[in-house]
Length: 497
Image 1 (cartoon, helix red, strand yellow):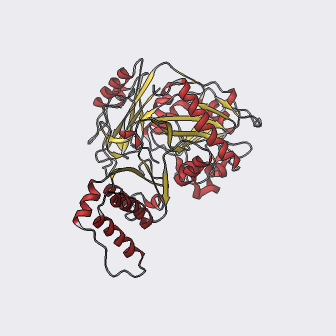
Image 2 (cartoon, one colour):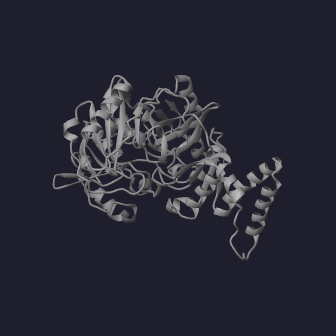
Image 3 (cartoon, rainbow, N blue to C red):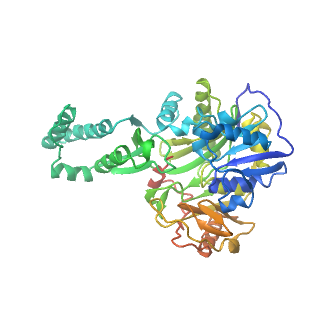
């Protein structure tokens, strides 16, 4: 824990605290589960009680809870004496919900709109890291397709010239001349020889949409051809919507990825137990990028010395850099970090709890979550009592067939009640409960979270529970936690928001 002096004291947390939880996924179910255990809880309200798990814990509030209805939201909070608002997803944070709903008597857990830019705009985050000398991958930002494409082809042209492949280099130069023309007569077509070279030419990089893309806005590329295709998909075909109006092309790093989540109250930084997420859809870290297929906690990837380095060289400089720009960061600061041979480097920053990292974190958290979040939002985190159980938690995400692409909805879910126990928790994500029937409503459906005295035991227990839960098309990765002690995994380049 690091404390930066100069922060002011706020109002104490009420003994009977009315809480509003915003969001309806697996992360929010885990937060609701822990909030409901607080001795300080008055009434827990939630914006999305269609989620079957949240519905059992919270009182529903009206639909259409979004930042386009600020007047309604403010009046509703006043009428229901809301003391604490806990914002789960990144979208309302980046739209400024904290700025709109926080008052002298109502506390919002989550950063302001300006502070949330660290996740909402990867270009801004990269600039901040460069200014603060935070270790990260080398990168370039582009706001139009042709500039990004030409950047890759310029590098290839130089390489071909150095390799005395002049005809191919001249072909690329001819393309540049064509693309510079204001009036182009026809499309430019590369020769079959050059097209074949593009598909085979190794030039590993990562192409990222700069905006929010629900954790999927990253494409890993191994060849020049794959990179050119990724640029076209993001910027021309708009597979990530407006999030891809600008992109980042960065070096592809190798190593293991670790999720470092810290509570930040503007002056104090409290690092929580480490987690490891699994981004790619297929076992063995293959296939498309997802929002996360599972996570375990604690992750044995950083010793005390290396964790001190991350805190000192990454987290503190990030918070300080924002403060120098007049931005006070309060909330969760999530650093996705790659453990490269050259040391830890930042893949991305997020402005909220991770999903699925929150599920194993909450399963192990000891302490009053209302008090912890209140203190984080009101600059008194240094007085919090935060501890974790000695258990290891492994969360395996059960998904709908087709995820992360198109998937069906409305599949009946059974078997949850058969597996739930004190050390086996099922956090609901893409579910919908009507008339007592629980059905699927999203790609990531359930976060089956097991607690045990070893990671292997927790992993086996979670997978056994998945086998007993039923819905048509269900699938999951059975290898969550298998690479816990490895130091090299190409899949760990897959982070992206």
